[in-house]
Length: 175
Image (cartoon, rainbow, N blue to C red; front, side, top):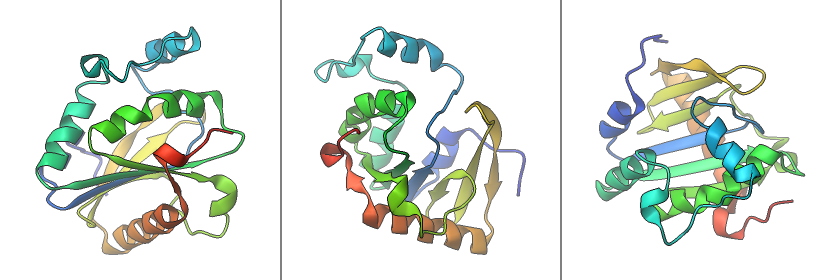
């Protein structure tokens, strides 16, 4: 494992075939998001017709990556009833989909018999893992890179198992 992790945009730029992301937390408290979450709590919602107002530069990066022929998929394992944070996240996921990312949701109850890694991750081209570490309250605790073949295999199998059971974003109803 490496403690020196290049910016994610650089990692994604080197991706040739696939980038898959597994999220398994019910709350994230990442830097820069508190203001958007507070606005959402106050009733603000993103306007589907106003693409310029959406989360940039992330969505631009996804659009560019997908345009290069890289498949970008995200699966979220969530507890039901969902947390406030997951309601917030679900409310703007249409922007990820519009940018070309495929997103699915899996209720945690349906993941009980799946072997899942202990941390969220991105798996790039099936070989490079960027582990995302979080504190107990959802703050970022940093990232690590790994190209360990056994870990990459675990991540690939876990992601595909979740993906196979999960519901596409446009059909997932918040409970």
